[in-house]
Amino acid sequence: MNRFLSGTRSTSAPAASFASILLFALLASGCATTNPTADGRSSAGSAPESGASKPAPTMSADRQAILSMVGEFGVTFAFDETVPLVNGYEPRDATRSGAAEAVILVEDDGDRIVLQHLLLVGDSVVKHWRQDWTYEADARFEFTDDQTWRLVPLSEEQTAGAWTQCVYEVSDAPRYCGTGKWNHRYGNATWTSDRTWRPLPRREYTTRDDYTAMNVENRHTITPTGWTHEQDNSKVVRVDGRTEDVLVREFGFNHYMRTDRTDFGPVYAYWDDTAGYWARVRGIWNRMLANGGVVLETDVDGMPIIEGLFDLADAARDDAPIAEDRIEAVFDAYVVPLDARLAGE
Image 1 (tube, rainbow, N blue to C red):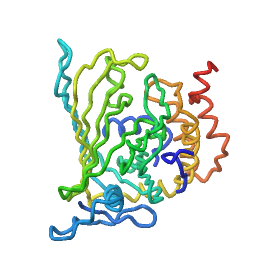
Image 2 (cartoon, rainbow, N blue to C red):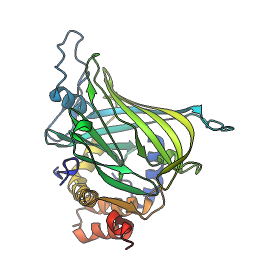
Image 3 (spheres, rainbow, N blue to C red):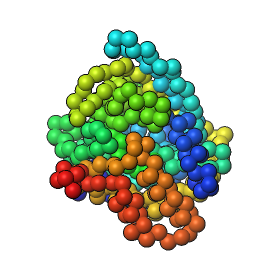
Image 4 (cartoon, one colour):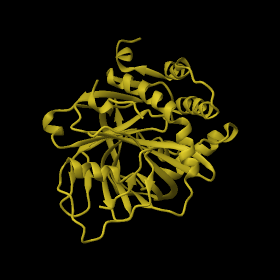
């Protein structure tokens, strides 16, 4: 199995209001250290004193930077279209939003680290995005277009000393990957990806249909108060894997600031109840991606998959046994192996 997919170790709102709370939460969301405990929770760590010694820029320092994203945060999300690239294009209004979000350590195998984000919306919890980090990965999935992701090999030249970050939807469906090295030279660890493709974000595909993909460079920086995620986005009309137009550039800035003012107890209760279930879901996605890729037979929002898997998570919270065939039924209905699609099945 490919190294970036290996390993499967290890809120929900009431059913009647699930869709509305999920949609609200996801639209709202669009070197300091924390101290992850054994269950992945973060103690209220503070930034190291300015006189503290800095680790050498090694894999150990890279790991510490990634683990520093674990914790409890108040998050702000900002997106600004900056450079119109086609005649007559009028930049859209800037967007601003915020959320309370916990980041939990799910897996740490040394050269592979899995972090799960969970949103707190009032007293409800919504499983949010996931980020997997693999050191010197030999493959990654890439978004092509039209709800399709393909597994592609990475050369040793691309990955020597580098980490590949892969990002997943709330349902653990794939979104995008990027590969790059951590830079520790200037006192704050920063990771910068290569440019890769990704589907439209939820904040966009719910309101517009004038482009089909984003070409993105991502940058993560560990700061004295938490961490940041910067995005250099180009909004592209892409058809059958070819670029037809680049409409505009956009700058995204997500700022994760550690907080001790929010009770994240419901988040940890949700994850205690559902972690085993979601590990099984990840395992199915990983097997399908490792076999070459997937095609999602849903609209771009992927809601049938999200609702099907979240309904089962709610059942798991109620201590109902979740048979494997109930999970696989969601995949059978909406997820097609890429090789089967190419074969015309």
